[in-house]
Length: 166
Image (cartoon, rainbow, N blue to C red; front, side, top):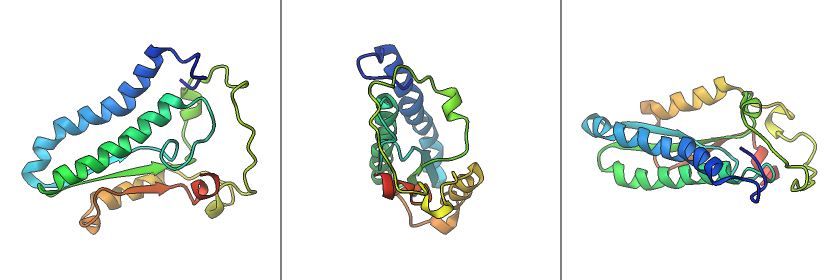
């Protein structure tokens, strides 16, 4: 839920953090014993929102959960490195998904901050969002042996958008 902080219910805060942060924690926690046996790669999907830029107001719980995923990733990269487990986090920007349709946004008009971004919000693609296929190729690279010396890294996949807006 995206809502002003005064209107964000504690249950809504908990739901967002449970899905995004606790869900990530539990998935990794129960995968680690298997990964320690053979090494491997953990790839967490965070967001540019809360890590490098903020799209606008109202995303307090979402941005907090995504920033928490980045911190979790870095701590685990240190902890699990001795077991040959790499841990990285990708931070997509604008990607063609249905996140806006699936996220409740409530009473944001009075807390929105008017912002004018440079023309062509995403420099690399002249304003066009990225695709899930582009994100998948990054995940494939991070899961492969081609990235065997990359761990504890956050990688933004946003066509340089967050450099303009961050």
